[in-house]
Image 1 (tube, one colour):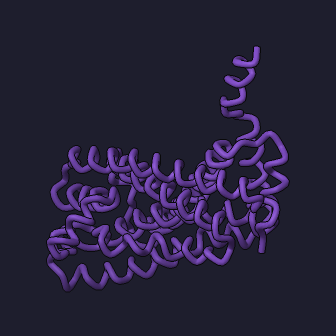
Image 2: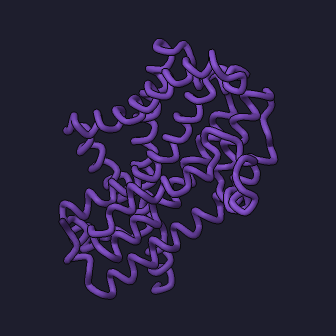
Length: 274
């Protein structure tokens, strides 16, 4: 009987996960500024790089080989950025409102919180980047959706990498408090220069290329350029990104749970807040 009770206690509750997701959906629905913020930054970046593309198309043979290469790059980069930020910001919403203690006197388990964070990250990313992608169609006559199925492969890999970084950042903020929240904004930009977002990896110094190839994002953006320039989907790059993401997401979940358990042992859950 005890073994059955222990077994059922380890099973994630879909109802509790959906309840937590629903809480944040209501929070979004009741706040125009939050929804505006989701669409604002991807749209600003899309417009900025769209006009840069229009300029470079007439001045660079490299860019002229593929229409919309920079718009595709900036929108895919924003998938990575928004997915990481979606996890971190939703978690910090709970800390700002001093709600973690209330959540964990309920039957909610850390794994369920993590799944809810990832779900909200996906929703926020779809709203933000999807809105910018749709605006690019009438404004620049370019649709990233023309990439077809490779776009889905790129999107999934980038969002999983963002989740891994977001969970790690959330764990660090949980451990060290809101004084470490700046990491949420800075962490993702640390990998941008070596992810090959706007240029091929082979222009980096040799030793830095080794680091770049250890990132799923570099394989994704190399694959994007292969689709745009060579009109072929590089399965090898996709598999590399997939394998690295499996490793990183596992490490991200493990780090988040380890930080959470440490905070619970030290009694920090009731003390964290603004």
